[in-house]
Length: 421
Ligand code: AMP
Ligand code: MG
Image 1: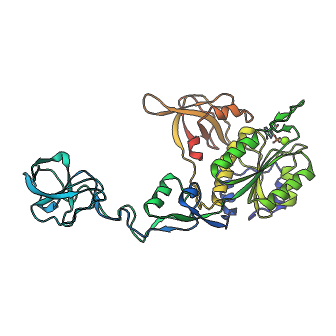
Image 2: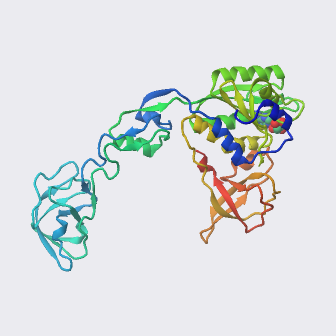
Image 3: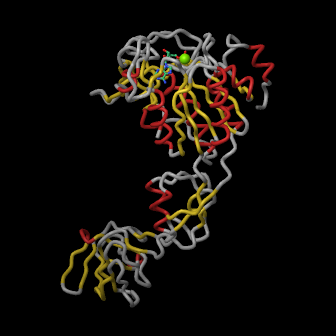
């Protein structure tokens, strides 16, 4: 860890100054090296994976200059500016079936979309603008020389980088690989992420609930978020609030994974061993971030593995994962500069409680009002343990550090959940 030693962190203790979220994220990203391993995969199997090298095109896309319309291919210089042009139709070109001859003065070729431009022709006039009588074609004024032609290589020129290293291969990208005639690509190995929950009160699905016990939901939300990110997951179950158990789990996770995500046990309660164990067996990056929900939270490293000790409350887990762990895991997967999630201005249809100091992520539902503006309502009870407010939401309402309460009608910033994967 760059700037903080264990001694620093302990001097700060849990009550030390909290980092701004943006600073916390920069500090995390500065710690992340992408996983080194690579593998060759067939293009379809590489969907969702991250390119490890640039893909340079060996061909022009499109490979030949072709028509963008159904119409007539002709010589642009012959179009009469103010009157009618009459040409004789000497043949037909269709997609995959080029016209073999050459267009000379006074001639044109019937052409379909995608057909190679015949030699000599440089312009296409849409069929709607042509009157055809036998082999004669009559074209009115108002056409532009050069129009409706797609140039060879105008999408991707041979020799150029079509997709750069670090690109995540989504449907458009694998389509591009297809258009290049590429059958296999080199991608990074998927990062392996171990996760576990901590807490004596937690039971797993299938076990009976005793007095004071609850079912573990964080391992489900974390599983979901990790899986949607495309990393390999290692579910280590529930770990008891016990110093040795936590320490053993850390050691096992660090030996098997590139990153570790835990929930619970990072506050200062008597049974909170996560932060203490990180401090004892690993390196602490920071303890506290000025965000809500999400304090406390521990970031650091155990051996070579990145460590995210998320809070226990179900909403806090999701907020801190999306805001801090997800960009770090994207960088670990080989995406050099994970894009910040999309944000948009919206009018708050709810009054929102907020004290200056921390950056807050409230749960909201945004929609478009009749006047075209986006409006956002908060969803129900905003307590950090209330997961239903997250399920009912489609966005975070992001309230910056220095903002105070929001009145109905104020402009706020929303972050659609769709931006998170
Ligand atoms: P902690 O951070 O361990 O003090 O936990 C804070 C709150 O979150 C407590 O109410 C815990 O019971 C709850 N909690 C912790 N872990 C989980 C989990 N895996 N699933 C559901 N709730 C949890
Ligand atoms: Mg706990």
